[in-house]
Image 1 (cartoon, rainbow, N blue to C red):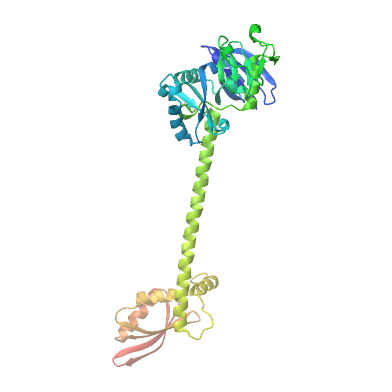
Image 2 (spheres, rainbow, N blue to C red; image 1 turned 180 degrees about the vertical axis):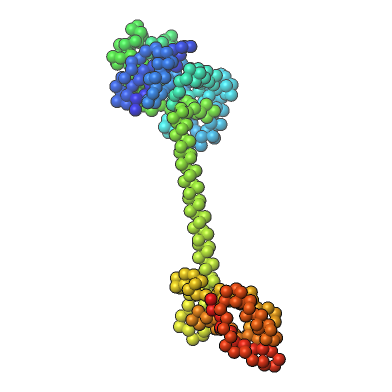
Length: 379
């Protein structure tokens, strides 16, 4: 993916210097001052990095054990308080684990108002960006580069930007490498300097692609592009859906496990009762198995009318009738019952017939003042 670089020090009301470079350092759009409409077009399909001048930032090395983000953000400003002229509440502190080395933080300190102003002006002009960083991160250790207005230095004694009037105060280091560019002031180039044969901003952009600088938009100034925010929202939504599905599966699995445990307990109770009634039985026939077999072999009341006949008999019988015995065979229900008199027996038969039951009286006799009879009921 290509990357659009915007150089914040050139920011005006209508224009800004920008360039577009491919991942392999191939220059797609050269370094030029462009109107914001043109920059927005250049940004399409690219990552955008805003580059701040190191003259607006100070660099500090702070010895602290690695802390969590919140703890470090609270501790670092006060660890630097004696080295800072401004109130720490007015300053923005940034750091990155990539630059934590040998128990020391590399910390950048800049004015919050300056950063907020840059971000606001870009947003007001519709410029979205992914990273806000510093040109100094283009340097490797023991390197210096001569820019048109100032020097960038990364040495053991100093890290940051120097103006020409104080650059001679730094001690000379034999292993320090100095770069100059086509737009570097000729009178400021040391004799031992190496020529990059390109504009300084193009060289900075190429190096920033390679060195992966850290983003100053962190903590209270956290900023994300629309693409980044959309990505985070999609990840959050996918995570929530995954958690919901996982919780649903977990809850159902727990319920199924509990149900299986209850069924096992009931089966154990059934086995105990079954042994009491059938002590010589070699195996326990589960009621579930019998019900399953019954449902498979009997798909409706028409195949097995026992329950229908029993229901109709229960509705027809009254307090004057007493059922003594029931026997069901060949879709016929034989009922032995006693009634107070023959009139009650006849009334029972009439009620069954009105309920579409075929009634056949097999016998009827008087025993001890009651009428004992046997009826055969079919549908």
